[in-house]
Image (cartoon, rainbow, N blue to C red; front, top):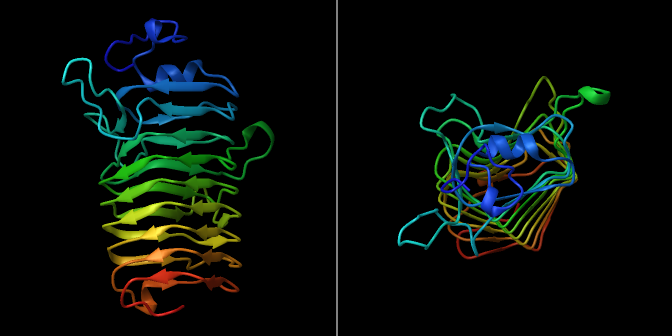
Length: 265
């Protein structure tokens, strides 16, 4: 609780809540839950060898946290600190199975809100954020909503909103690992008013039931991916040309709808 909490508290109830996400992350163990309300303004890396943690924002829908009127809107918002470290995500996930639910993320100007990281290490030195999920969150402003760094696998990105970002979702090469985003599901999301909606090297990714709205440069770009992606049941509104969505080899792009100016891939 960023309004009433204290890091000297036990962190096991609302009446004894922590005040920082870093303190909550240091306390949580594999399979645990972190519930939060108010404005988190931190850049956090998840703990080493702690997996399957769910971070839940309190509130009926992801929105800006506001203490006024008194007793009113204390939703869950995650934003950059007053003095951020450049090019550092709000949260860097380094182990498997983390899940983020019902949070408003205000993106950094030069980094991602959530970075899922993979380094190709072995044994206890492995850092791999695969099998994680993001559900019912909102990503707004700044550079990137969700970033795959190094080629993680089996992500579930569902029922989120991405708007006014440079990239809604993108992949980068991390720690020398350039494997494509692998066998992940991206469904039921809304993308609008981004410079680029989805730019990611992908392999066997399922992209369906999403709404892609206005954009500036690219809608969907799978350049560098190994392919065999399935893109179906999406709705694209606005004007699209062939160069605005770029498939990888052996993709299946069928059953998508568009309102105006759509050229089939």
